[in-house]
Picture 1 (cartoon, rainbow, N blue to C red):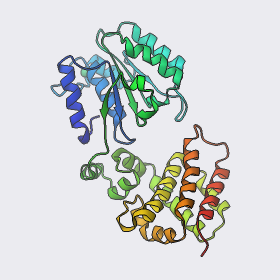
Picture 2 (picture 1 turned 30 degrees about the vertical axis):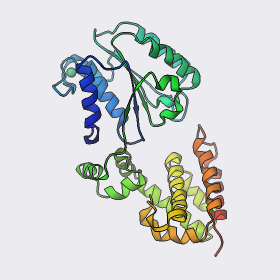
Picture 3 (picture 1 turned 90 degrees about the horizontal axis):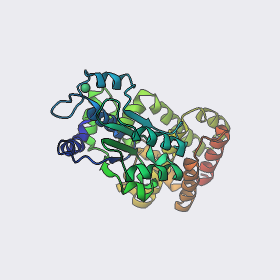
Amino acid sequence: MIYPWQQAQWQKVQQQLRGSMLPHALLMSGPEGVGKSDFAYHLANSLLCQSPDDMGNACSECASCKLLSAETHPDLFVLQAEERGKAIKVDDVRQLSNKLSLTSQYGGYQVAIIVDAHDMNINASNSLLKTLEEPPSDTVLILVSSNPQKLPVTVRSRCQTIAFNVPDAQLSLSWLEKQNIQQGQALLQLSHGAPLLALHLQQDDLLDHHKLLVSSLLKVAKNQPVIELAEQLHKLPLNYMLNWLFDWVEDLIKLHQCADSAKLVHVAQQSELKQLVLRSSLSGLYDYLDQLTKNKQLQSIPLNTQMLWEDLLLSWYKTLKRV
Ligand SMILES: [Zn+2]
């Protein structure tokens, strides 16, 4: 699917395609939740469809399109880590390269999409490099990454980057409204402006999880014991929770530094945050942020998330001066 904020990127690749100038390797880069993967699939469909329309959109009716919608097209390969946060391994990249070295089954393009390409470990990246240096003809590799800096320069430099930024707020809001989303503004704030992330927050009751996190933080600030609170928090999706906690602490730091002109994620909790600023020091908040960064960088979910939350809430408690 192409979203309203991706028109320019779409026109660019279609122009290249029409002029037979489409590079063999593309890197779709940009923050999470702006639709990079959807764009990659839309492009793959466009390349594999037997009669795309004038705008390059797949017809959804030809034999190729039918195979694509059944996810059984023999010329489309999708590579991603077995689990979120795990590495893409060298064997998987080798397997992909071997498949691409054969001729296409349908006589057209062969397309490979590497989702979260930054998850490739160094051996996997090196292995991909060989394919990037000598790509088989009529092959298009599409790397998708929200963290392209993690990819080796050698890989990045062999791809044409297509950048996807966070769309204009008004555009995102009107798109969310069309999806029947009521609290668009609040959701967008929590999603750093990424509309698909905002949609996802709404659909999965994540907004309620966020409320629970904020109320827990405020309760800890009022000296409530952490164990019971940790018991509730540890059952919720850790990556979202850690990101929000990170935003919460960053909001406090921003308030320390620029007071009223600070652009906050937690706008709705502004007055509570302003109270907490008075009870915290910049250095204490930075220490806490360090602890969070370390937790966020862990490759896998810790075995005991209850203990992790007790730890995080206790550190939060210690960050605040008693009143
Ligand atoms: Zn088609």
